[in-house]
Image (cartoon, rainbow, N blue to C red; front, side, top):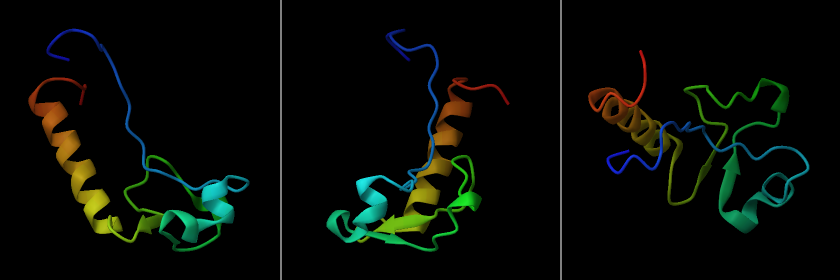
Length: 79
């Protein structure tokens, strides 16, 4: 943003959609999928549908909130 190389961006939570290798082989990626009711999975949700062994759902949520605060402080997003 500072160098004006990017005017807009979006950040979404990772979702291991059905049919992907992440969904089929979660252990291969160190993923723990909380439930398989994928119709209820939403990218813009504040609730994670999975976590990694070394990046827990709470950590993801904390980082996402920090990202939003930083973006607001630097006027990178509209409220």
